[in-house]
Image 1 (cartoon, rainbow, N blue to C red):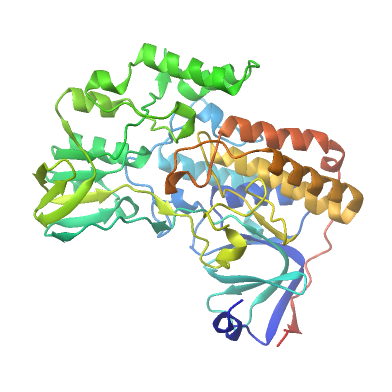
Image 2: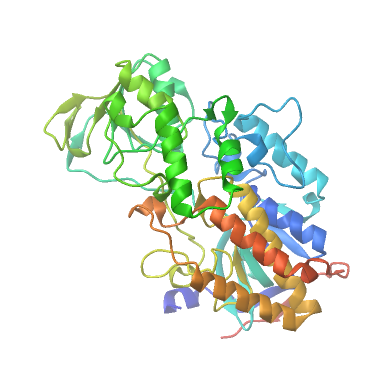
Length: 466
């Protein structure tokens, strides 16, 4: 730890050594919290905003959803297993308002509310004498916790490409996009082609804008329905049939090309990678917009010239607004980068959840998947709870679980995803889910164990190391 950071350490710390700290009350934080409640693990959930929901809360500064945001995974494959989204009034792809309402149901059903502290922005986390020091903005002394679960997500710091020249119009990131009104009757260039980019393009086209889309490569466009069934449901059924991953790839690509056709049929570039080597874009509207002449494709930006954007093929376009839907930097700003990531920028956490060196440090949601991240965070939370309970009730089983996690991590050779910043956290949803569930089944005896935490004691003040 650098001298500058060390100088920030307080001489006294408030001890919360009887409990764990969960950072964030979004989807991943709530997933871990409900498992901790169920297993009797004492904890505080620190949320920097004044409400739950994280990026799904439209009215919160942390929210990155916009007026027209809907889930890109269907309800049958998104809600938590112990509180499914299967009420008859749930649409197949709910809006962000319904999603936030679902999270409120989670908080109520599982008794999470008493554990959440709002307006608590974590500014620094560091190991200290086998414990974890958590600094909170506005608090004179750091807190000392038994362990920490980082569940604050990785959609906070926008990735903004830089190009030469000067642009006279408006430049924004999708992070600050909230309403189609921002684009109405404007000449709009959207850069990138993930799910947010597809939504923003749709809003702009339907708002009467002249729309351009800048692509560096070809993309797979996956419709939300196949033969009238939610695509996630169709894939889930196929994943139940034992077959090698390469056969699943051929099956899905073949089905997609049969019902929709390759992008080149719509005069778009075909992807130069397999469908499971990148995060798919869940839409069939982009190819249709191109085919209808409502969307003009452009290559990567070369430079700006006043109101004109010049592209690498030498063409240019007069534009009023450039929207960078280029993702986010996977930063954990309150944790030393050398603890969080390796030299290649990949998480140092085994299975994206368990730190190999710091035994009290965990992560939930520190991954990106081609499926519901909520469920994966729930399974991560269950395994984290298993380990914590086992360390208290059956240390030998805890050690066996740690060894199994390390072995699975070593054996799980990183899949070949597209070499881009966007895919540094990528996991295959189905493979990763199977891996976590196998570990849970293997240690099913631990899953029957619980803790019975004593009534919460008042925090005490202890001397910190010089």
